Image 1 (cartoon, rainbow, N blue to C red):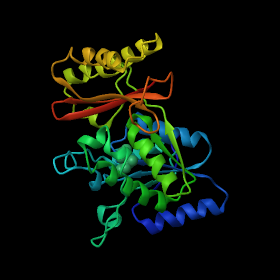
Image 2: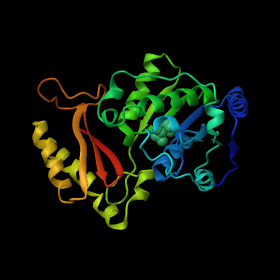
Image 3: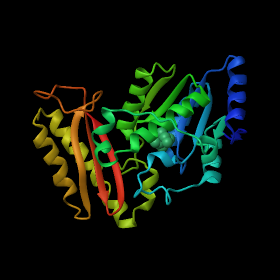
Length: 285
Ligand code: PAF
Protein backbone atom coordinates (compact mmCIF):
# COMPACT_ATOMS: atom_id res chain seq x y z
CA UNK A 1 0.00 0.00 0.00
CA UNK A 2 1.60 3.32 -1.02
CA UNK A 3 -0.65 6.29 -0.41
CA UNK A 4 0.02 9.99 -0.19
CA UNK A 5 1.15 11.11 3.20
CA UNK A 6 1.08 14.59 4.75
CA UNK A 7 4.33 15.58 6.46
CA UNK A 8 3.60 18.33 8.96
CA UNK A 9 6.03 20.37 11.02
CA UNK A 10 3.73 22.85 12.72
CA UNK A 11 1.21 22.38 15.51
CA UNK A 12 -1.39 24.68 13.93
CA UNK A 13 -1.26 22.82 10.60
CA UNK A 14 -1.66 19.42 12.26
CA UNK A 15 -4.63 20.64 14.30
CA UNK A 16 -6.29 22.00 11.14
CA UNK A 17 -5.90 18.68 9.30
CA UNK A 18 -7.12 16.53 12.19
CA UNK A 19 -10.11 18.79 12.81
CA UNK A 20 -10.98 18.49 9.12
CA UNK A 21 -10.87 14.69 9.30
CA UNK A 22 -13.01 14.64 12.42
CA UNK A 23 -15.59 16.98 10.91
CA UNK A 24 -15.94 14.46 8.07
CA UNK A 25 -16.73 11.78 10.65
CA UNK A 26 -13.35 10.02 10.76
CA UNK A 27 -11.87 8.33 13.80
CA UNK A 28 -8.26 9.38 14.44
CA UNK A 29 -5.55 7.09 15.85
CA UNK A 30 -2.16 8.30 17.04
CA UNK A 31 1.21 6.52 17.25
CA UNK A 32 3.90 8.57 19.05
CA UNK A 33 7.49 7.66 18.12
CA UNK A 34 11.01 9.03 18.23
CA UNK A 35 11.64 7.83 14.67
CA UNK A 36 14.30 5.31 13.58
CA UNK A 37 11.26 3.25 12.79
CA UNK A 38 11.31 -0.54 12.76
CA UNK A 39 8.70 -3.21 12.28
CA UNK A 40 7.46 -2.71 15.86
CA UNK A 41 6.42 0.88 15.11
CA UNK A 42 5.03 -0.03 11.70
CA UNK A 43 2.91 -2.77 13.28
CA UNK A 44 1.23 -0.10 15.44
CA UNK A 45 0.43 2.08 12.43
CA UNK A 46 -0.69 -0.97 10.46
CA UNK A 47 -2.95 -2.10 13.26
CA UNK A 48 -4.62 1.32 13.44
CA UNK A 49 -4.98 1.49 9.67
CA UNK A 50 -6.67 -1.91 9.60
CA UNK A 51 -9.42 -0.35 11.74
CA UNK A 52 -10.16 2.03 8.90
CA UNK A 53 -9.22 5.22 10.74
CA UNK A 54 -6.98 8.18 10.00
CA UNK A 55 -3.52 7.52 11.41
CA UNK A 56 -1.12 10.19 12.66
CA UNK A 57 2.45 9.16 13.57
CA UNK A 58 4.70 11.64 15.35
CA UNK A 59 8.46 11.56 14.94
CA UNK A 60 10.19 13.62 17.60
CA UNK A 61 13.34 12.81 19.56
CA UNK A 62 12.26 14.30 22.86
CA UNK A 63 15.22 15.89 24.69
CA UNK A 64 13.28 15.99 27.98
CA UNK A 65 13.31 12.22 28.41
CA UNK A 66 17.09 11.74 28.13
CA UNK A 67 19.33 12.12 31.17
CA UNK A 68 22.55 14.17 30.88
CA UNK A 69 24.75 11.10 30.27
CA UNK A 70 22.29 9.28 28.00
CA UNK A 71 22.23 8.78 24.24
CA UNK A 72 20.23 11.83 23.06
CA UNK A 73 22.99 13.05 20.75
CA UNK A 74 23.56 9.70 19.08
CA UNK A 75 19.89 8.64 18.97
CA UNK A 76 19.31 7.81 15.29
CA UNK A 77 17.50 10.48 13.26
CA UNK A 78 16.24 9.04 10.00
CA UNK A 79 13.18 11.10 9.06
CA UNK A 80 13.44 10.56 5.28
CA UNK A 81 13.58 6.80 5.71
CA UNK A 82 10.84 6.87 8.34
CA UNK A 83 8.51 8.70 5.95
CA UNK A 84 9.11 6.12 3.22
CA UNK A 85 8.34 3.30 5.67
CA UNK A 86 5.20 5.01 6.93
CA UNK A 87 3.92 5.39 3.38
CA UNK A 88 3.96 1.61 2.98
CA UNK A 89 1.56 1.11 5.89
CA UNK A 90 -0.96 3.74 4.86
CA UNK A 91 -0.17 6.39 7.49
CA UNK A 92 -2.16 9.55 6.78
CA UNK A 93 0.05 12.14 8.45
CA UNK A 94 3.50 12.36 9.99
CA UNK A 95 3.99 15.07 12.58
CA UNK A 96 7.69 15.92 12.84
CA UNK A 97 7.97 19.14 14.88
CA UNK A 98 11.26 20.84 15.68
CA UNK A 99 12.40 21.15 19.29
CA UNK A 100 11.60 24.89 19.10
CA UNK A 101 8.03 24.12 17.97
CA UNK A 102 7.52 21.76 20.91
CA UNK A 103 9.52 23.66 23.52
CA UNK A 104 9.70 27.39 22.87
CA UNK A 105 12.28 29.26 24.96
CA UNK A 106 9.72 30.19 27.64
CA UNK A 107 8.36 26.61 28.08
CA UNK A 108 8.02 25.91 31.82
CA UNK A 109 5.46 23.17 32.52
CA UNK A 110 5.99 19.46 33.07
CA UNK A 111 4.10 16.36 34.15
CA UNK A 112 5.35 14.49 37.21
CA UNK A 113 4.44 10.96 38.25
CA UNK A 114 5.43 10.28 41.85
CA UNK A 115 4.71 6.54 41.93
CA UNK A 116 5.08 4.16 39.04
CA UNK A 117 7.76 6.32 37.46
CA UNK A 118 10.09 5.79 40.42
CA UNK A 119 10.44 1.98 40.11
CA UNK A 120 12.17 -0.31 37.58
CA UNK A 121 13.60 1.96 34.82
CA UNK A 122 12.67 5.00 36.90
CA UNK A 123 15.28 4.03 39.50
CA UNK A 124 18.10 4.21 36.99
CA UNK A 125 16.59 6.94 34.79
CA UNK A 126 15.08 9.29 37.40
CA UNK A 127 13.97 12.06 35.00
CA UNK A 128 13.01 9.87 32.06
CA UNK A 129 9.33 9.21 32.67
CA UNK A 130 8.46 12.79 33.59
CA UNK A 131 10.08 13.94 30.34
CA UNK A 132 8.25 11.23 28.44
CA UNK A 133 4.90 12.09 30.06
CA UNK A 134 5.35 15.79 29.35
CA UNK A 135 5.88 15.21 25.65
CA UNK A 136 3.14 12.55 25.41
CA UNK A 137 0.65 14.86 27.15
CA UNK A 138 1.56 17.66 24.78
CA UNK A 139 1.40 15.43 21.70
CA UNK A 140 -1.97 13.98 22.77
CA UNK A 141 -3.33 17.50 23.25
CA UNK A 142 -2.00 18.61 19.86
CA UNK A 143 -3.12 15.58 17.86
CA UNK A 144 -6.32 15.14 19.87
CA UNK A 145 -6.87 11.56 18.67
CA UNK A 146 -9.66 9.20 19.68
CA UNK A 147 -7.02 6.68 20.73
CA UNK A 148 -3.26 6.23 20.88
CA UNK A 149 -1.21 3.05 20.48
CA UNK A 150 1.82 2.16 22.58
CA UNK A 151 4.06 -0.89 22.21
CA UNK A 152 4.13 -3.21 25.21
CA UNK A 153 7.90 -3.52 24.76
CA UNK A 154 8.06 -0.29 26.78
CA UNK A 155 5.73 -1.80 29.35
CA UNK A 156 6.35 0.69 32.13
CA UNK A 157 5.92 3.60 29.72
CA UNK A 158 2.58 2.22 28.51
CA UNK A 159 1.25 1.74 32.05
CA UNK A 160 2.42 5.18 33.20
CA UNK A 161 0.76 6.84 30.21
CA UNK A 162 -2.47 4.95 30.98
CA UNK A 163 -2.22 6.21 34.54
CA UNK A 164 -1.61 9.83 33.48
CA UNK A 165 -4.65 9.77 31.22
CA UNK A 166 -6.74 8.33 34.05
CA UNK A 167 -5.37 10.62 36.78
CA UNK A 168 -5.76 13.78 34.70
CA UNK A 169 -9.08 12.85 33.09
CA UNK A 170 -7.67 13.15 29.58
CA UNK A 171 -10.23 12.09 26.94
CA UNK A 172 -8.00 9.60 25.09
CA UNK A 173 -8.06 5.82 24.97
CA UNK A 174 -4.62 4.27 25.42
CA UNK A 175 -4.06 0.89 23.78
CA UNK A 176 -1.13 -1.43 24.44
CA UNK A 177 0.03 -3.54 21.47
CA UNK A 178 2.05 -6.75 21.53
CA UNK A 179 5.83 -6.58 21.24
CA UNK A 180 7.16 -7.35 17.78
CA UNK A 181 10.16 -9.69 17.89
CA UNK A 182 12.96 -10.71 15.54
CA UNK A 183 12.92 -14.38 14.50
CA UNK A 184 15.23 -15.30 17.43
CA UNK A 185 12.95 -13.53 19.91
CA UNK A 186 14.85 -10.28 20.44
CA UNK A 187 12.33 -7.46 20.93
CA UNK A 188 12.60 -4.90 18.13
CA UNK A 189 14.14 -1.65 19.31
CA UNK A 190 15.72 1.38 17.68
CA UNK A 191 18.72 0.70 19.92
CA UNK A 192 19.39 -2.80 18.52
CA UNK A 193 21.33 -1.14 15.72
CA UNK A 194 24.02 -0.17 18.24
CA UNK A 195 24.86 -3.85 18.87
CA UNK A 196 27.89 -5.37 17.13
CA UNK A 197 27.12 -8.46 15.04
CA UNK A 198 28.16 -10.92 17.75
CA UNK A 199 26.30 -8.98 20.44
CA UNK A 200 23.17 -8.96 18.33
CA UNK A 201 23.26 -12.79 18.28
CA UNK A 202 23.87 -12.96 22.04
CA UNK A 203 21.04 -10.52 22.74
CA UNK A 204 18.56 -13.30 21.92
CA UNK A 205 19.40 -14.65 25.39
CA UNK A 206 17.14 -11.97 26.88
CA UNK A 207 14.00 -13.50 25.41
CA UNK A 208 15.32 -17.00 26.06
CA UNK A 209 15.71 -16.09 29.72
CA UNK A 210 12.24 -14.57 29.95
CA UNK A 211 10.75 -17.61 28.26
CA UNK A 212 12.57 -19.98 30.64
CA UNK A 213 11.11 -18.10 33.61
CA UNK A 214 7.63 -18.12 32.09
CA UNK A 215 7.84 -21.87 31.39
CA UNK A 216 8.80 -22.53 35.01
CA UNK A 217 5.86 -20.34 36.05
CA UNK A 218 3.51 -22.33 33.84
CA UNK A 219 4.77 -25.53 35.46
CA UNK A 220 3.72 -24.14 38.84
CA UNK A 221 6.89 -22.51 40.17
CA UNK A 222 5.75 -19.56 42.31
CA UNK A 223 8.98 -18.52 44.00
CA UNK A 224 9.89 -15.21 42.37
CA UNK A 225 13.49 -15.73 43.44
CA UNK A 226 13.70 -19.07 41.61
CA UNK A 227 12.11 -17.55 38.50
CA UNK A 228 14.49 -14.59 38.50
CA UNK A 229 17.44 -16.94 38.96
CA UNK A 230 16.29 -18.97 35.94
CA UNK A 231 16.49 -15.73 33.94
CA UNK A 232 19.86 -14.57 35.31
CA UNK A 233 21.48 -17.95 34.70
CA UNK A 234 20.71 -17.69 31.02
CA UNK A 235 22.00 -14.12 30.80
CA UNK A 236 25.17 -15.24 32.61
CA UNK A 237 26.06 -17.33 29.53
CA UNK A 238 27.21 -14.09 27.94
CA UNK A 239 29.73 -12.34 30.21
CA UNK A 240 29.34 -9.08 28.28
CA UNK A 241 25.74 -8.76 29.41
CA UNK A 242 24.77 -7.52 32.85
CA UNK A 243 21.33 -7.52 34.39
CA UNK A 244 20.59 -3.92 35.39
CA UNK A 245 17.36 -5.12 36.95
CA UNK A 246 14.96 -8.04 36.63
CA UNK A 247 11.69 -8.01 38.56
CA UNK A 248 8.34 -9.73 38.58
CA UNK A 249 5.65 -7.18 39.38
CA UNK A 250 1.93 -6.54 39.26
CA UNK A 251 0.90 -5.55 35.72
CA UNK A 252 -0.91 -2.40 36.85
CA UNK A 253 0.93 -1.10 39.91
CA UNK A 254 4.38 -2.29 38.75
CA UNK A 255 5.10 -3.30 42.37
CA UNK A 256 6.11 -6.79 43.52
CA UNK A 257 3.17 -8.82 44.85
CA UNK A 258 2.75 -8.17 48.56
CA UNK A 259 2.23 -11.78 49.69
CA UNK A 260 2.23 -15.07 47.81
CA UNK A 261 2.47 -14.63 44.03
CA UNK A 262 -0.99 -14.68 42.43
CA UNK A 263 -1.69 -17.05 39.54
CA UNK A 264 -1.96 -14.29 36.98
CA UNK A 265 -1.74 -10.53 36.47
CA UNK A 266 2.05 -10.32 36.73
CA UNK A 267 4.75 -9.21 34.34
CA UNK A 268 8.47 -9.92 34.40
CA UNK A 269 10.38 -6.79 33.37
CA UNK A 270 14.11 -6.68 32.69
CA UNK A 271 16.81 -4.23 31.65
CA UNK A 272 20.09 -5.57 30.31
CA UNK A 273 23.31 -3.67 29.72
CA UNK A 274 25.45 -4.64 26.81
CA UNK A 275 28.40 -2.27 27.21
CA UNK A 276 26.72 1.10 26.89
CA UNK A 277 23.67 -0.26 25.06
CA UNK A 278 20.67 -0.76 27.30
CA UNK A 279 17.94 -3.17 26.22
CA UNK A 280 14.60 -3.68 27.94
CA UNK A 281 12.05 -6.44 27.55
CA UNK A 282 9.21 -8.11 29.43
CA UNK A 283 6.80 -11.01 29.39
CA UNK A 284 3.36 -11.16 31.02
CA UNK A 285 2.72 -14.15 33.32
O1 PAF B 1 8.50 5.25 23.09
C1 PAF B 1 8.97 6.28 22.56
O2 PAF B 1 9.49 6.25 21.45
C2 PAF B 1 8.90 7.61 23.31
O3 PAF B 1 9.10 7.43 24.66
C3 PAF B 1 7.61 8.40 23.03
C4 PAF B 1 6.39 7.69 23.56
C5 PAF B 1 7.46 8.64 21.54
C6 PAF B 1 7.68 9.77 23.72
O4 PAF B 1 8.78 10.50 23.27
